[in-house]
Amino acid sequence: MSKFKLLRSLVLSAGFALGAGLALAQAYPAKPVNLMVPYPAGGPSDAIARIFFNPLGKELGQQVLVENLGGVSGALAAQKVLAAPADGYYVFQGSPNEVILSPLANAAVKLKTEDFRLVHPVADAVMVFVTRKDLPVNNVDELIALARKSGDKPLTYGSVGIGSLYHLILENVQAATGIKLAHVPYKGNAPLLQDIGGGQVDFAVLVYSAAMGALAEQGRLKVIGQLGAQRSELLKNLPTVSESQSLKNFSYKIWTGYMVPKNTPEDVVVRLHAAIGKSLQDPSVRAQLAAQTQVASAPMTLAESAKFFDAETARYRAIAKQINLQPQ
Image (cartoon, rainbow, N blue to C red; front, side, top):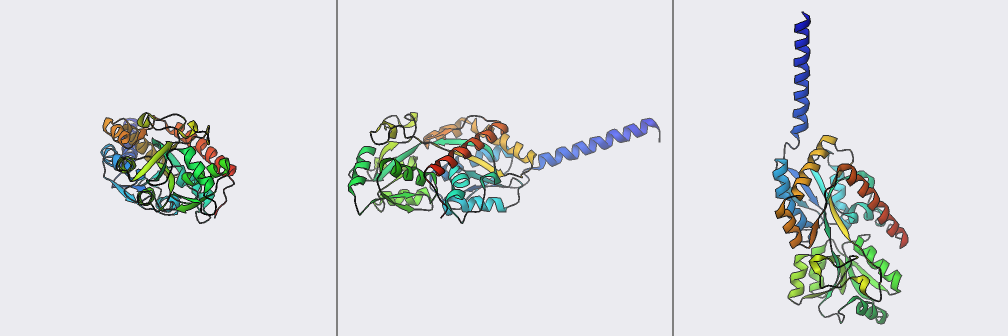
C-alpha cells in the first residue's frame, strides 16, 4: 500500500471513529426521559415538574414523562432513581429534604447524599407558616404564645415526613422558644395542605404555593409569616418570621434541583445541563414559576452546581447536628 493510500485509509478510519463517537454522544436521549417527583401530584414539587417537562422535552428532542412517587420523606422516589441504570433516563427532581436530610433522619433510608450529582438548581421557594382557619392566631408571636398555653394538649404541626426540612425547622423552633409541639408526618404537601384546610392539623411550615394562596383567599386557612431573611417580592405584605419578637434572626429558604446518579456518563450530564439551562431562560418558564411563588435559579456551570451542592450538604448537616437529629 502506498503512503498516500495508507494516509487516506487512516484519515477515513479516524473520521469514521469520530463520527461514531459523535453519534454516540448525540444518541442521548434516544427514548423518553422520566422526571421523578418525590411527592404526590398536586403539590408545589409537582407544579415545578409540570412547568419544566415540556420545555425540557423540547430542548432534549424527546418526551419528558413526570412520575410521582411519595413516601419516606421523598426518599422512596430518590431510591428508585438510584436503583435504575445511571444513563440519564431517570432524572430526580430533588431538594435538601430528600437527598440530604432523609438519610440523617430515617434509619430505613440507605441512600447517601454523595450518591447524587446535582446537574442544575431550577427554583428557590418561599416557605411560610400556615394554620387552620380557626386557630386563634394571626402572626408567629401569637402562635408561639398559644403553644405555651397548650399544656398537656400541644398544638399539632404537619410535615412531609420525619427529617424533612419542615420538620427540622419546627424542631428548631421548639428548641429556640421552649414550646412543645406534636408532630404529624404526611407523605406530601398536597394531603397536608388539604388537612390544614379541613382543620385536622393546627399548622405547618410549607412552601408557599398558588393552591395555598387560593385556599387563604377562600378563608379556608391562614398564612401568618414567611421564613426568608427578607420579604419576598412575591409576598411583600407578609411579615418575615425574623420580624417577630419570638424568633428574631430566624430564616430559611429551600431550593429544588435536577439530579442524576453520580456515575451517570459525563456526556449525558452535559446534555441535561444544557437543556435545563436553556429551559430556565424561557420567559414562559420564569413566569409560571413566579405564578407558583418560585424564583428561577441563576445560571450555574456544572462545577458551580457541584460546589453549591457540597456547601448545602454541609449546611443542612450542621442544622441536623444542632438539633441532635437522630435516625428513627
